[in-house]
Length: 587
Image 1 (cartoon, one colour):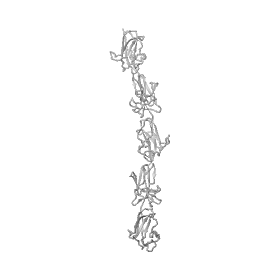
Image 2: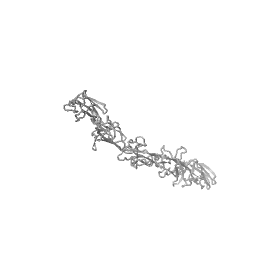
Image 3: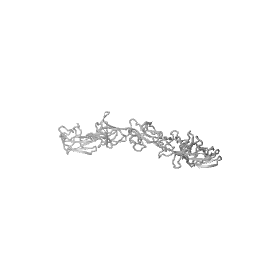
Image 4: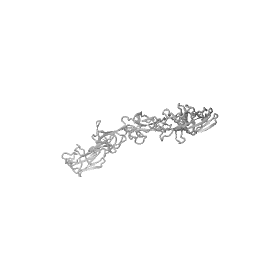
């Protein structure tokens, strides 16, 4: 009886030479039947099996038993033959991987040989990008570019290098960081190894969307094992790399407490600075020291930090210091520490970033004060014998508003002391002295600032006082005085002895002038009855300034002469010069 042979041409997705249950036949493949000399006896094309409907079927029948036949499969364009004779003969591929021909087949009478198959597959490829992961999150974000020049190795499952390439611009899109391995065998386990550029670290592996994540192990740089199917192009094997980042700058003495490090404000060594995570845990601690490059004090730095991670810098203020205002002006020189906690706002760095703007300003509170004194000579200076005045109200003003009030007291045995403490450097303060009833303010700023009166004679306000960090200004004083008066009697000296005897009465209507030391008339009056006693000849000049030289000039009535000057008891003698009618200078 005649014999037959045939079976299927199948798409061998895993290129293992076996038609697995999920691998279908391929229609349209040319199959030739050859004699032992290689001559084509018949040709056919694979179609659906007429009995089962399965694709990829072919058959040659009415064959002569005992005759050697060879089946030749013609691989479709772009296809390779699967490995030959791998396992069960009923489902394996029988085509030589080079020629596409089976071994010689000799059939017996009536035999139907349905084991002559051929597996074909398309070669596969894999690749994608190596990218600069600026936030180290393991994903290639839209604004993160590829890195050219990175070495990428293709390994087998034993770690042997099969191929090596280097990232470059994608030939189709021009995007940087592209690599590809093609002509790969489906079903074969591959590993992609990315060689980190110098100074770079690998991003976290397998974080999110596989099309854009980093697939490289952070330690080895190797992907997980990749097994491809026939014709597959796997464009998801990526690697992200980043450079570590750093942050730091200075802790400075903010003399004017304005939150900015001015050109003349130096750093402070020995201040503890902590690096915190977003939950407030301390990751690292350091202490400010001289900058190793410039020698400037107050420097600190935290390096080898991970981009994209939120960090907080915590400054520990030394005893007796206060944090400057936060975020006042230029970020490169401002103070970034919260005034209460000493902590910066969260900082998120990019790959390779060196953030040298995280500073902290510190200052010591200041104080001012001194004495309110009785300026007996109204010269605006507290002389050695001039004592302080207790109970005087002193106000501290800012922008015209009272921010503190105190009263002068005894300090160390000296009266008239006041002080305002815990003041902020750099603030414009004004001290207001409230004059006691009946007192006037001494002249302002007369001589030595440590002992002069600093209060305006009209308003009682000092000039503006601006303190530096830690400063104690003990020079803001105020002198006060009561006005003085002088006067007495013009009398008829019956015996011309220069003394007003008990029976010698005053003379009304006599002109009396008050002169300054240059002889200028300041005031004039006329003698009258004393308003308290009724005695005639009385005069008085009041509201006079202590310490000022005055001269009293008496104008003798017509036909009168002046008595002898300064004869005996000063309370009752005549003080007028017999020629000029003027007294000696009176202070």
